Length: 444
Image (tube, rainbow, N blue to C red):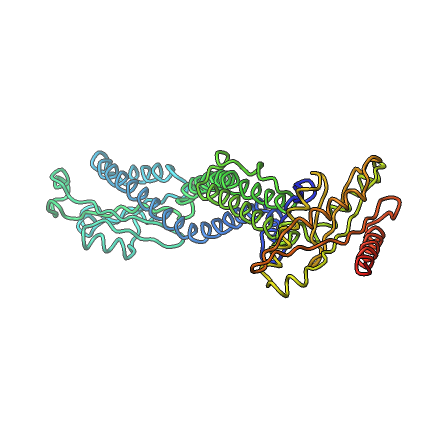
C-alpha cells in the first residue's frame, strides 16, 4: 500500500566503477575504421611481400620459360638446318638461310661450327656464321655430343650438335654414323627474350592484386556485417541501459548471424536483468524500514515532496501527521528487544490498515512515525484522523511474560497550506504540536 511506485522510483543502473554503466562507449573505438585500417595494412603487407618475393619468383620464372622457349627454338632450327644442308650444302645458300633464321625474332643470333672432319672435306667457311674460335659451351657440345645451355645477364644460348646419319655419309666419307659433324648455336638477347614473359607476368600480377583487393573488400564487408554491426548495436544497447530500465529493445537473437554474438547478446541481457534486480533490491533496502516494511526517512521525503507538488498544483489540502509512541522504552527495557520489535511492527500494521489507500506512512526514528494524508477535503478533519491513529496504536497488545502491555501515541498535525509551504516548515509544526501533546499528557 505504502511502497514506492514505479513512476517515481524506476530502477536506474548508476555509472559506478566496475559496473556495466562505466563501460566505455564501443562506438568511439570506430570498429569500421579499425577494420579499414586492418584491411589497408593487410593489403600493404601483402603488396610488400608480393613485390619482394615476386621479384625473385618473376626472375626465376622468366628465366625458366625463356630457357624452355629457346631450347625448343634451337631444336627446330638445328633440325631445319641439317635438312637444309642436305638439300643444298653450298655456303652462300647456308649464309642466306642463317639470315632468314635471324629475322624470325629480334636479337636472335644463329651460328654454325664445323667439326674438324667436316673442315677437312669442305674447308673453313666465312667467319660471319662459322666462327673459328668456338666458346666453351660449343666445345663441350662437340666433346659430349649433348646440347649445352649457356646463360649470362645479357644472353641466352643453346648449342646443339649435328650428328652424322646414313644420308650424311654420302658426302662425309671420313665420318661414321653418330659422329658430331658440327654444332648449331641459337642465341637470344636476354632482356628481349624475357620481355614478353615479364609483360605477361605483370598482367597476371595486376589481375592477382585486383582479385586480392576484391576478396579483401568482401571479407571486410562480411566481417562488418557479422561482427562490427552487432557489436555496435550491443554497444548502443549498453548506453541505453544506463538510462532506462526497459529491456524490451535488446537485439533479437534472430538478427545476429554469429553464434558467439548471440551468446554475448543473451549474456548481456541476463546480466542487465540481474543488475537491475539487485539494484532494485538495494534501492528498496535503502528506502524501506526492514522491521516494519514501511518507508524510512530517505524513502518518505521524495514521496512527501511528490504529494506536496500535487497538492500545490491542484490546490488541495494535505496533512502531515507526526506520531511518537508513549511507553515504548519501558516495554523495550522490561520485556526485551523482541517485544519492542513486535510492538513497532504491530503499530505499523494497525495504523496502515486504518489509513486510506493514498496515505503514506513511514517510520522515521526509533518509535517515531510520519504520515502524509493527501487530497484532504474540507469535510475531512485532520484531528479525527489523528484520533483514529491514536486508537489504532492503543489497540496493539504486546505480550510481556504473563502480562499484556500497551502503548499510546502523542500526535501532532500540520496542514498545507495553512501551516507551511514546504516539508521543513510542515514537519517543524507537526513535531512541535506532537511535543505539546506529549507534554500535556505528562501533566495529567
